[in-house]
Each structure stands twice: as structure tokens, then as C-alpha cells.
Length: 141
Image 1 (tube, one colour):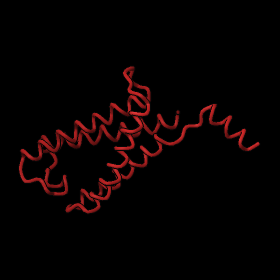
Image 2 (cartoon, helix red, strand yellow):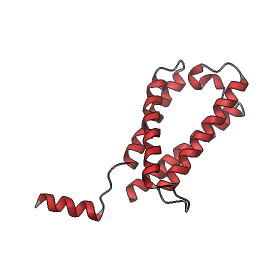
Image 3 (cartoon, helix red, strand yellow):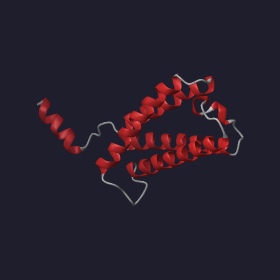
Image 4 (cartoon, helix red, strand yellow):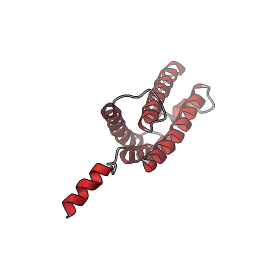
């Protein structure tokens, strides 16, 4: 579990930076025409897209905090894993979408979304428990 917690910590750090990036777009420190594939037409669209993105990122942070046992409140482990698999799929699709984006800046985000997908893959990877190790040893002998 120690490695998984490290992956979760890395992912949490990245997600907090992503949220800061979205806030920077909302307060217009970063122009919104470089985000969302260059498809946003006005401030209202930008605000809606950015707020939704921040909410989704906060949701993912909450799920990761549950997975890493950082929160007392916790969903069933299977539910947490299903949500993380959904995010894995979203990040893979987002990687493809970013590669097809209009702006070079957003194409760079394909690296970020691929890293996030890989981190989730590692977080969801098989854990060696005492029961699994005993079964593996029994199968070897």
C-alpha cells in the first residue's frame, strides 16, 4: 500500500496544480483561448467549463483521499475502484483529445493526462496481500 499511497500523493499534487490552473483561467491570468481545444467563444462558456472542471477535479481528489485512507468517510472499495477506472478511461480519451487540440499549448497537456492515467493504473494495480502471497506460494509448490 505504501507505493499506492505515493502514487496517490503525486496525483493529489498534480490535481491541486490543475485546479490552480483552472482558477488562473477564471481570473484571466491565463487566456481561455488556449484551453478547451481553443473552442470556447466567450467568458460565460469559459466560466461554466472551468467551474465544472474544478468540481470534477475536487471529486477525483475526494475519491483518491478515500482510496488512500486519508478520510474517515469512505465508500465501498469496489465503488472507489469503479470510479477510478472511469477516470482512467476519461484520461486516456482526454489524452487523445489533447493530441488533436487546436493549440500547441493544449497538445502538451496530453503528457499530463497520460501521466494521470498511468498513476491511476498503478493505484488500481494488484496489491500483494498475505492471502495472495500464500496462494502464489501454494501454486509454485
